[in-house]
Length: 126
Image (cartoon, rainbow, N blue to C red):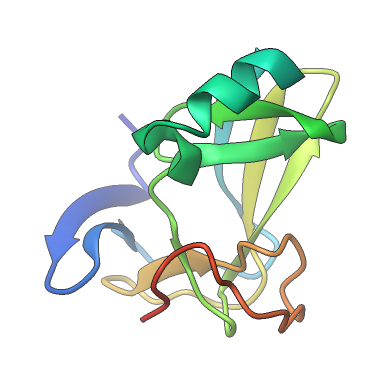
């Protein structure tokens, strides 16, 4: 159990990750282990509900399923957190990119970079 965060359901978005305490810029929120999937496995997963939870891994063809709360962070074009791959530990690290207040939803930009405004067209953005 991570003492910094919790998952709650919210209207129109489903599940979301929230701060249980104030989080400082640069602070690691969570380090999530991943399950690597091959390009072949990824193609199979993309035909299921798992398609919404696949992150890239090393290439655009292979992928990963992120454990912990990693697959529950919602998207924002004005995120308060970022994610980075750690290939050595086979994990996804989520870090605050600005101060996050207790009770605030923690969001990331699904495009991979906090300032990337490329439209997201594979799901509804709220």
